[in-house]
Image (cartoon, rainbow, N blue to C red; front, side):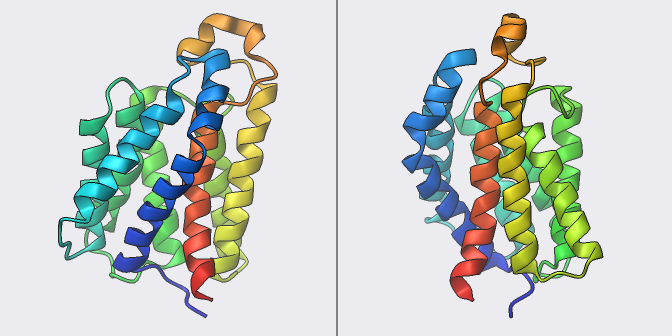
Length: 215
């Protein structure tokens, strides 16, 4: 059983994320319409669509180079806060991958995600419980750490990671927004799932899907 991710896997993951986001444009925008601008699905899909178009035209020699390109292109394509936040998710993974083996182990992947989380929390000021993408990313990383401690396979670790992200996104319904436009709603933001957290779940689930396709 394959227990690592290589450059081709990461390329497939980005393409799969694009496919899954495209399928959920309306759903993501509907979630965002309640407590945000209502354009999250359109915005994030345009970022991934632009990214897959450009990576199809380029050759990459390392995972680090690839992920930094993905993140930077996302930031250049999308304005507002969505571009930098989701862009840093990938660019920081790329920076962390510098010097690592081109076969990314569970430990490597955990470090990559953790550094991205720390960067996003630093630039956005959000923390767990603020009803943002952090509420899906944070429990997903904790799940991966737990799986590593239990010496689970990468496939099983990614499955549990995706499930943790999904649960985290769903739990945002019980939170009052602290960041973004939704913060102006106060307690009226209760009962609604955060679109950014849902997008984060879609992103993380693609990691499991691609590895699962190969087993």
